[in-house]
Image 1 (cartoon, rainbow over the protein chains, first blue to last red):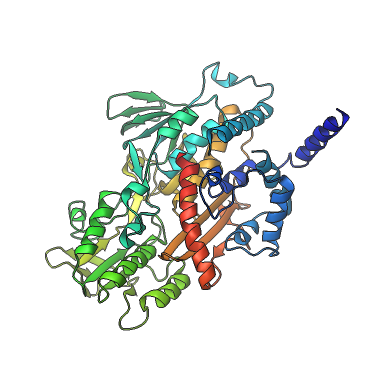
Image 2 (image 1 turned 45 degrees about the vertical axis):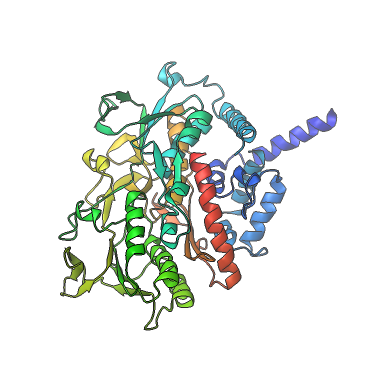
Length: 95
Length: 432
């Protein structure tokens, strides 16, 4: 019980950290390519479903700072601040 | 998306909405009545706007008005010329938008708009009132640009710049052309729908001609001095189609200082201002474009032929209650693409829900990615990330976006795969 409450509190605090950023306008654009339909089809573009905020954030930062090669994502990730990428990751992990 | 994940998705949005609207108790601004947003045009802009309005706020009623029960996508339509797809694979309907999101669909055409009364009259006689109107009507053609090329001439010399029967006609003309024949591909000046589209079209035609009529030639007659992804296209044409050699399947000619002025239909000749004559067996003439006529009729366009908007909300400069998105609207430097229309629609849906709920409109973010196929195993891309600058004008974010890195075969093959995957997913995100 105490553990659950602590987890909820941590989650609430983490949401508050990005409260000044409305991640929706950025995150909606991720779904142009990363749709859940990927779960059914054999798509070369990964679904973001079932990824944690931390996993998505790390991937975005790695793309932005050229630590992870890819054809497109490095060009896109450079368009956002680290804080924005964190907010997007947090939003996508919840939806 | 599966039904289950979509339901979870909707619940997620409901949670967010409850937070944003806490204390509002629905939409008191409309004294108990649900707000009604009408979306005109069921392409990538309109369909996305309708869907995301409902995802953002299920209290808003959304009506989508579109003349055709089924929509054939322009993206992917060049694949027909290479024999890689048929029109049936590019056809979508509006069933999911109705069933999954509760959008009301009216298969009809807008005959008039009374902006003062916020009411549309449809060709079928029905009258529809709105609290806010989102116009995403697409393009129409300027038939006064080239002497001899009008709507009737387009039935013989297709533009194929709206996918459907025109695309089929052009593909059949290509297939019927004798080996050694010449295709003329006339390309307008900017801005127009899908900047890299003509060059992808030339590529897809060349891919088919190389196999079936290898002595043929495609002459691109361009009103511009340069074009989208030019270095990548030319490198691909050199690799696949002998570009730069005497036997090249593709030649590109800039006629920026010497525009094409006249079509001689009986002789299949295009004549330029300086009197150069280009004779072809197949003539694909892509005319200059404007916002769709409905937008012009309603006074939503300026002297450029496109609709100026306040980018943050997409509101027309001429009417606060009308938003314009997609190819019809002026969102430059964002190019006129299906992907961009989808992105503009999402920003607009966020703004419209905010305005209706009297909450602050969030900062807008736009994205564009355009993939093109040079050959079935060779794809290229251009991308842009856009925000408002200090003067509230749309600007590309510095250091982001740009074209594919000079492609090795592996990157080219990966981007060809992404071209098809992004097409499928953009359809799912827009219509599914």
